[in-house]
Length: 318
Image 1 (cartoon, one colour):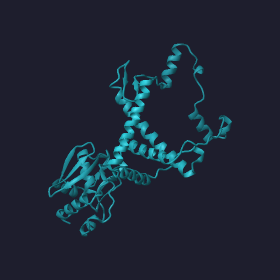
Image 2 (cartoon, helix red, strand yellow):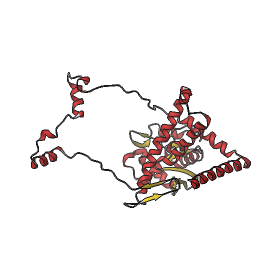
Image 3 (cartoon, helix red, strand yellow):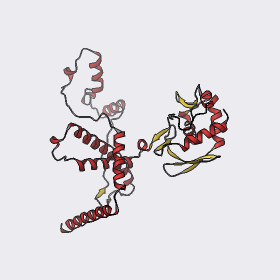
Image 4 (cartoon, one colour):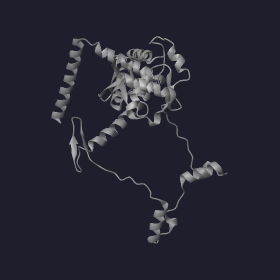
């Protein structure tokens, strides 16, 4: 199959990508979208805003190379990643055992004149939802949680149905996990703003610099050498090692309850998230917000202004 036909196929695939679809580069998973194509190249934009043109002649060189000698993805140069991700849209090129190359039926597959919208799954195509960054995921999950709390009364948890209780628990878990990750990242950034004895205030509160000691025991030989220097018997610091004790329990006749006080503790653990349902609900919320007419939007703004005024009055009175 000539590269002219492959190039036409590649452009068709790029132009027919779902608007919600993004591509990720193999290995480092840099996220980018295809903006447009022309006769000489494919124009893409990375999530951080950097634009790049992927040239047709480079695609041709890559296609020729991987037909005879697949590329190992774990040692792929960063500049080649976007080309591999985009070329994977064409049937006949795929990933096998960590290498990107032409499939065994690649030549035959590419020789068939397929329509551009024939189904073909590239391992480097994702939905925007699946590659959300922590600020986006926290925002979306918090919005879903706020909507759930608007529609349900959680003041008396005993009145919730089992399904409602599951939904609330999952949303709370997702918000907590995402918020904790984002909080740690923000905290690391704030260290650059807060001095050794500093305190920094924002609109909603304040932070100050603090510290705690974290200890990790040194190598056993170094400890014993120092104890010997101080004439301290080794027995003073020796004790039962739980990890070694577990090996003994697993490999001998010693039973677990011979060496442990065992009791059962029951708790609920999140074991699954229905991402599709969350996306559907979130789209519905966004559509509802976009459908607000000017009167409703003005009324909402007035309510917010009124609430802010009450807060200011309370603060002033305090």
